[in-house]
Length: 276
Image 1 (cartoon, rainbow, N blue to C red):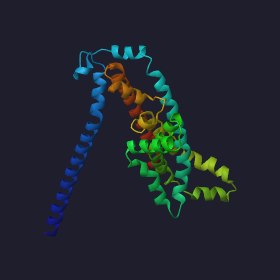
Image 2: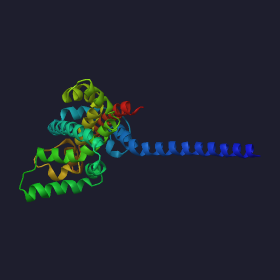
Image 3: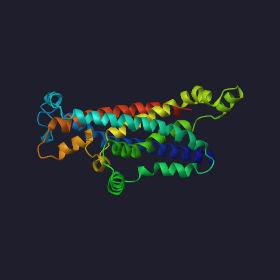
Image 4: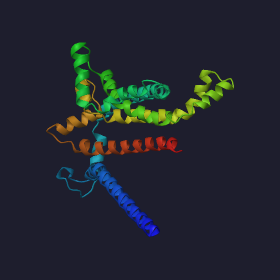
């Protein structure tokens, strides 16, 4: 009887496990659909003759051809890339320093980590408005590229730090101790041991910084001054009375493709070092 009861319990556990797997897969598919279905639909409409109708077909590439002849988006794109590159470099540098130091702190490490991650839960509009009030209205500084770099860095750095911590928290400090016992100096240990092992985290931090800066809008609205980024440009064109279909549909479709590709590269770099 005990054997029969144990067998029945095992079968119930297997059935519950199958139900949990089915539910997990179903929820994951539902989330992916909610995230990517609008992106795919936008791409389909960008190839439609009348995308404003909201229905696809007949298909054409003339909107993308018109995008090549309309030069107004090029300057905002250049500004966005310049700012994104600066933010990416800052994220790589600061994430390498902070991400390398936090796991070694015996006290205060979790508290500092929480401080660095606070911008994730603060609304972007609040951060942008706070930066504008403090620097423009209180200190009298003009908004421009530096303010865009600042708010983009505040937004991107927590993600960059998380990507760095995924690698640095798995770093075995005994390797440094062994290198020191063999006579390697501090700089030699950093360059020969820490640099190659932590490089994936640094690159991931840079990619997060570049990607999040390239597509950032709510914080930029308050601090852009005379500098116009590509998200600001497309937002202005979308809210204007005249509809510029190539800018609204084609540009956003291209930005979505680039963003997804960079996310995939970042996840692959992180997962390479997460494996046991």
